[in-house]
Structures are given as structure tokens and as C-alpha cells.
Image 1 (cartoon, one colour):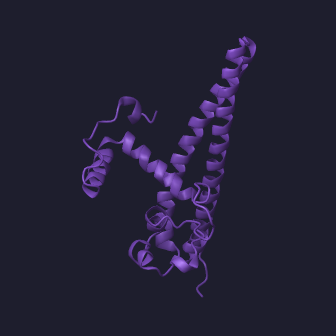
Image 2: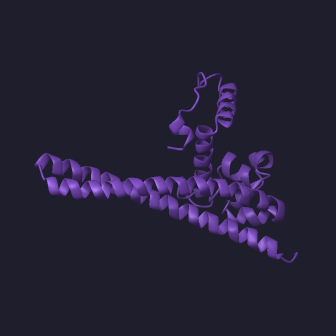
Image 3: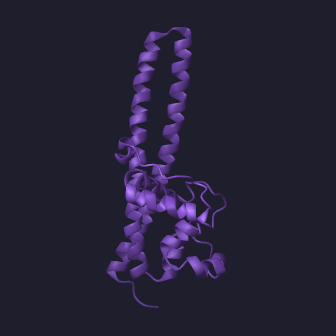
Length: 194
């Protein structure tokens, strides 16, 4: 067994921290959505009663939660962008079995035909095969946090970068026999990420 270099330790630590941060942000996002729903219901109930004081206070809380939602959404997108760089470093510096273990990929998946075809890189395992945390039962976003962050980063890039968005749209249309219809240029607000 070869000794682990400081660079390998660093990139592995980055991967583990990134997965932890992604999972925590996804859990926070879910909790924030629950708060938004609660405040919407409270606001509706206060309006039905004509309770202006409760309406005003609830509106403040609801606005704060909506602002927090926006911050969390952008953090998740940023984590997806960072993952791309970390994934490249993992592919270059770490043995494959090391990053497969760090992603909690079930060992029964390691030698499947799909893994041999698409699982040569960490990006392929996470985004194409969706095998992150496959050793755990359940398919929630919290179980596959890097996959979710990467998907959100890709969606954001498709909306904010017209060239990338058109390329992805055309590729999907080619693959799915035109299911996405004609390309529409993103609005100014979409390009700003709003």
C-alpha cells in the first residue's frame, strides 16, 4: 500500500467537507421551506381574522425566510460549482477506490457494466450513475447531496449562460427527439440568477 501524500489528504478532506456542507445546506433548505409554509399559513389565518398586528409580524418573518431561501439556493449552486473542481482533483490525485469509499458507493456497484462504462470519473459516478451514497437505502436529496448541488449548478448555468443553455437544450432535443421544443433566450432576470 502506497503512503498517502499531503496533497491526497487535502483533496480527500475537501471532498468529505464538501459532502457534509452540501448535506447540511440541503437539510437547512428543507427546514426553511417548512418555515415559509408555516408563515404563509399563519399570514392567511391572520388575514381571515383581520388581525393586522399578526399579519405585519408574520410578513417580516416570511420575508426573512424568503431572503434566507435565496441565500441557501445560491450556496447550493456554489457547492455544485466547487464540486466540479474537487472532482477533477480527486480523479487526478486519488485512487479510484478511495473516492468511491468517500462517496459511500456500495461495493457491489464497483464492477457493474454501467460503472465500467460511465464510472471512470467521480463526476460520472455522481451525476450520470447517481451512485453517491448508494450504500444507504433511500433516494432523497439529503442522501445524494453532491448530485443535487451539481444539478442545481448545471440548471443555474443553463439559465444564466445563454451559450451553455442553448448547447444543453440542443443536446437534450437531439437525445429526446425534440421533446424540449424551440430554444428561448433566457430573460434578463434569469441571466442574473433571479
